[in-house]
Structures are given as C-alpha cells and as structure tokens.
Amino acid sequence: MMDKVQLPEHPIFKVVAEAADELGVDAYVIGGFVRDLVLKRPSKDIDIVCVGDGIVLATQVAQKLPHKPKVSVFKNFGTAMLRAGEWEVEFVGARKESYREHSRKPEVEQGTLDDDLKRRDFTINALGISLNGDSYGTLIDEFEGLKDMRRQIIRTPLEPGITFSDDPLRMMRAIRFASQLGFDIDPDTFDAITDNKERIKIVSQERITDELNKIILSPVPSYGFKLLFASGLLHLIFPKMVELQGVETINGNSHKDNFYHTLQVLDNVAQVSDDLWLRWSAIMHDIAKPDTKRYHPKAGWTFHGHEDRGARMVPRLFRDLKLPLNEHMKFVQKLVRLHLRPIALVKETVTDSAIRRLLFEAGDDIDALMKLCRADITSKNDIKVKRYLQNFDKVEKRLVEVEESDKLRNFQPVITGEIIMETFGLKPSKAVGEIKEALTEAILEGKVKNEFEEAYTFMLNLGEQKGLEVVSNKAVQGKGE
Image (cartoon, rainbow, N blue to C red; front, side, top):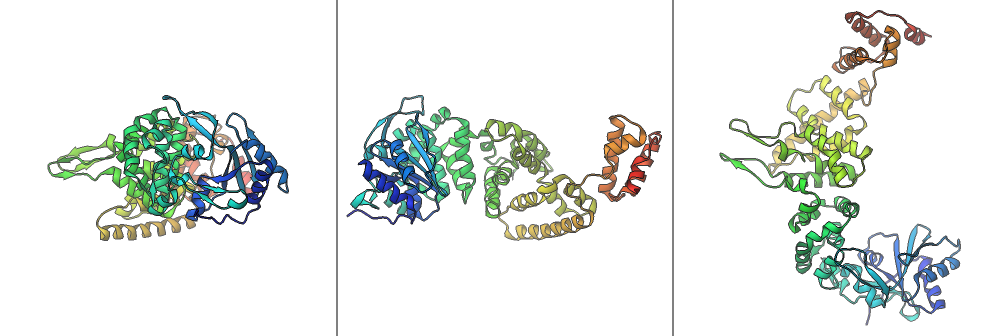
C-alpha cells in the first residue's frame, strides 16, 4: 500500500487537479516542496510536473483561479510559472535528460514520470505526490527518499558518479542540503564528490557562490565547510580559506589552527545573527594570517597587521567569488579592519578617547562589530573565555555611556570644510584638510566639544598658527541669527 500525504489546505492543489483531469494528463507535486512537507519545513515554491505539456496545464490553471494570474512562459526551458497568493507555482512537462561531457546544459526530451524522477539530484528530492482522481495525495517514492529522510541521509537516485559528472553543481547542493538539514552524506555519494571535484570548474562562479551562501546561512555552517574541505571542493572554490588550515611548530611553539578557529567564530556568529554579511565577516576576519605569519624566538608566532592586510584583500576576494562590490563588501572590509580594536580595549585601561575613536570609525556597524568580536573569543579554556566576555561587558557599557554623552556614532565635526574655506578665504587645499583633521582629532581626544562656538574658536587658533587671516565671519553671524 502506498503512503498518502495530507496536502496543505490551499486551493491551488485542487485547481491543478481539476485542470489536469480536464486535459486528461497526470500531474504531480514534485521535489523540494514534497521534501519540506514531509520534514515539516515551510516552503512557498511548488513544482508541478505533468506527463504532457506543462505550459498548457499552467494556462488552464490560471483560467480557473479567481484572480486569473499572469502566466510567465519560458519556452526555451519548456516551463511556465504563476503566482497563487504568496505561493510561486512552476509547471513543466515530465522530461528525460542526457548530458555531454563539457556542459551542464542537458539535451532534453519528453519523458515519463519515472524519467523525471531519475533526473532529480537526490532521493529526498525525487518524491512526488499525485494530484489525479482516486490517487490524489498518494506519495510516489521510487528511490526510497522517505527512508533516507528518516535515516537523515543525502544520496543520489542513480549512480552518484554519473549524477555529479553530468551536473557538477549537484556536489555543492549535496553539501548544502547536508548543512541545511543536518544530514549525513551517503559514503558512496561523498566518494563520488571527491572523485569528481575537478568537474566543478565547468560551473559558473555565480552558481557556486549561490550555493556557498546557502551553506553559510545554514544553522551550523562549519559542518558544510568541513564537508567542502574533506571533499577537496573548498581547495578549488576558495583556496585562500584553505591556506588557514594547519599548525606549524618551531622550538615547541605552535599557533592555533586558524581554519578551525574561523569555523568556530562563524558558528558563534550564526548563533546570534542571520546576517549573511556578518557571517562573511567571520569567514574573512583572519584571512590574512597566513600572509602575515612570522616566528620570533622570544615573541613566538605573530600575525602583525593581519587585520589591515585582510581588509585590503576583501575587494579582490569578493571579486573572485562574484560577491557584490557594494555596501556589503565595504561592511565586511570595515569589520575585518576593526575586529581587533574592541579586544585591545579589553586588555588596557579603557580611555574615553579610545572609545570615541571606535564609535567614530565603526559608526552604525558598532553593534555588528561587537557581535563579531564576542564570537572571536574562542578557547578550550572556559574560564578564560568567561573572563574575556565579562571584560567585554564592561567595554560595551562604556560604549553606551560615551555614545549617550558625546553622540559620536557617525559624527561629523560641526565645522565643515566649507566653513573653513569661507572663514579664511581658501580654496580646496591641503591646509583645509589639515585644519579639519586636527579639529576631528581634538574632538575625539575630548579637548574640544563638538559644539559650534568651542569648535569655531579652536579652528581660528589653528588658522592663526598657520598664518591664515580671517576674511569672513558669516558662519558665526549665521549661527547667531
């Protein structure tokens, strides 16, 4: 007896069933939606496969839905898509595929449901639910996907070497599903990933990075990275990260393995934030350590300047990985550059000046920076970690106090470059920049309040020291009016 599945109470399923019966075709819900339904995971993307013309079925369904949604047709792929409320529904005719050696684009022809299920990547995605007549709600499971879900295993429906050689992106997808679901990868399937890893080179970087981002966003991302590393895929798609791995020992002195430290920091961040770019900051924060590693007989292992070197590396790494070169990249770059600063404050007497500088440089990203820095405190010694985190609490308290009194987050000096130029009759020049920088320094040091009169007087004194004459006091008059 075949299992029956309770489909969600949504009119789309009954409408598809009616349209399929009218057209005399068999229709099935297939793939990821069925997997998530069984695993009780939320899903809004529905794939409908019919043994016939999927575009014709989509058009018929749209006519029967109350709001008659627009059908988007992709003739090259033989697919059609429509929206039913919050749900996105894609229709395709059952197909069979054959691949050529140097291409991910298959040759496609019409096929049976069996053909369509065989071309699926993993058994947990090769599930279908019938939408026809008496068999409505019947689960089709030709490759024991249900059993693999219970065993929490990722396995290919066909011989895994063929599956991965045909479409190498599936190797990334196997690791992504394992990481998202917390499943194991079947040993034969994992061996096939290792054997076929070089095939990943025919896949576009954009598609690889899309899967990588999904691994990074999984509940325990280190698991996915350990699988990428063990399979050899990480060496091909992100070699700079692999360089972090390993421990060197000289005269009995060893440094920690920065690859596994990075993964721990990533997991720590994942516990407190779903922000992809904060997670990327965790991945990148020590990326320059292999390039800055030095051994000194007295000091031992050092990584001086790895934060600045790492920040300079971020744009190139983002470009190589086809990540966006926009404010997200700048955010990661900033956090990499500043990630040691709060930790340095823990080690010394915290001056208001140091706190002001951190607030000024971090701006609105101060909260994200503090999350990264807390995550960066890793040690097998729990007492040491606890003591560090308690010191961090003190730093965060001081940050709040100074921010409330001085309002220095994203602050701009009240004396602008325009006021300096107008007062001394200057054009844009080195002197203007020097006065503005000296004024900013004085405010950060707490010598001058960021209030107009006090800052203006300080500016006049700076101008006098440079031998500049006041040619206009319109700015003062403007403030006085």
